[in-house]
Image (cartoon, rainbow, N blue to C red; front, side, top):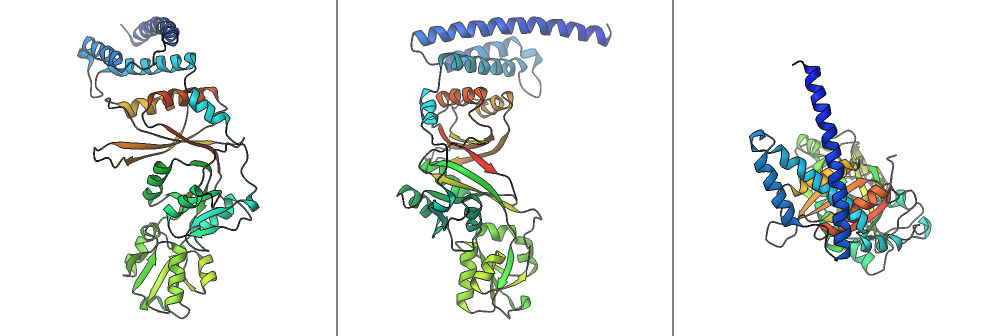
Length: 382
């Protein structure tokens, strides 16, 4: 038997499989009607487990380095069947109500009350100006203070860094997002060009200590090592520049922006000192109110996973099947002491797509600790 004959056999078998799959989906729709009539949940984990174990046993001789192929295929089939049932039963009514209540427009940029961590000249200041042109930010000391200002109604929006292209996630901010479950209403990626700043007249060879935010120190680690400087973390890049200006010590310096140098009367000793050439930080704007602009292009979710083997893979595969591009997956401990995790997920999309809406509605019914965090516009990098 040659290859063409074998492939013809495969094509014929595939046709049979497709017909059987369609018949199975028809049965799934009948199951949905029964469950809806009897007020039953879509997911029956015990039955799914029983089916998977049975098909695995029937196909055990074909086990490979990827595990049992039948188990993998049937898990995907059941995920698709559940999605079909959720759609037919109108799942996600609570989420749909949240979406319907959403505002469509942000407050006018020049009238928005915006809170940022740090002092004038910080990169969060640049992010605020990008997201809300003309705003006059209110500066607070810490990231929790940003959330507090929004929670108390002292600010309409809070600006926060969540991820840097070279040093990774700002874990403290993700922990606060998970804790407060405020909505993300806008985002932007800001180019970050770090400079070495010192008092006028200070010389590079005389410097001993450098101050900056831990993320900035990490982004400039190569230069810090080359100059043999002692790195000391500070609450914010611009605040470090302000402190250096006030100390009057020629042996200390700060890593911050050239704008911070101008604001605090410092001299730029070296420019673009970050280790990675294309260094940028992603900032978000948080709000107590849900706002979904017409041009929204990104969705954020928080959830935990059921204690089932392969649960993360199966969840992520549903996004792949729907053709959705994931841009961020962050896991954070629940701090319950039981080694359990919450997941933060970003993906490209909007709820104008029925497939996207159906998938998220289904997940809202199935996943523990599920929260919809926002559908917002992420501005393109300048």
